[in-house]
Length: 457
Image (cartoon, rainbow, N blue to C red; front, top):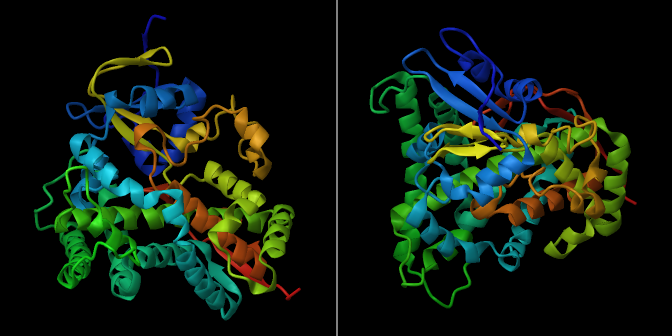
């Protein structure tokens, strides 16, 4: 096939599509795919500083970027550079030999057997959440705020164990500041040096220092206590400190902190987003909530705490979660930079171009999803999943850089949903939730739920 230059919206003479992408990136991506096809070129910024961004929307194109030609599409773009500058060079942002070494060190800590051991920590935080909801004064909670707090406490408990309380408050305050800073710089046509004493820069630097300090203090105390080789490790930090590569090398204190920060970022914002929208959708669709409640209540009768063994016994709740992640993927768009010129879906993407793959768009692709805006958990029955392209649904990415925490996120989300639906009937107060794109999918307005305590039996 002969490659052709890819079409796209013309945008404004001075700024191209910059204002549309800053104001409503998700809507802009969807409209562009609808109007121009599966590969779209955006012009961004003023003449002389103008860049090009290529959106790849088909599952076949996504597979090429993430898997079959992944070496040609690197995390060298501006956005990953900003994440790296704020959160360190951990598993999410590292590349080449750094990434390979980190992945080999960390992979054994995220096997299914190891992750299943975290189920008790998940149950502890879910019980605390259910108790807090039972005491809600007016029976109304904001799902986004509640799920963010729950997911942060859960991943912090798994990471830090007995030091969970020391970390949670600082992380809760610092992450939104750094997330907003990364987002604003990622979309800015001109980025001033971070060390310039501007108000936003100072605020971000203070948040960064506080975040680093609390992680470093916990790591230093663990180092002073010593690491015993026969200790199983009550938390992930202890396991990380013990991990060795094939040459017997360990992560140093800075590398430990960077991995911890990336786990905190990826392990709480993404799960919180998935839980928020699963609850919101169930609150809008009582017929599906009844089926999910029936499954959870039958399995977790008499107030029993869930275990990892219960996860595969909750297939309908798993389908609910997957459908929520289809409609509202926690990572709605992911960027890469092309090393060499290549042809994707018959059109040419030049060397050095920024490339975007957007689960938010591909998860609505009309060739793969009928009536794509409709909430239908049965899209994820085993039979229907088997007949679908592997990259028609990819909330955890794919290829050699697929998310290492996929099983942990699914386990945490499904077990938490089972307990909450057993205890509460949920009604969505806000039937529409305004969205934004930052490091993850952002809730830009209230996401309130009305809770009705279910009667025992």
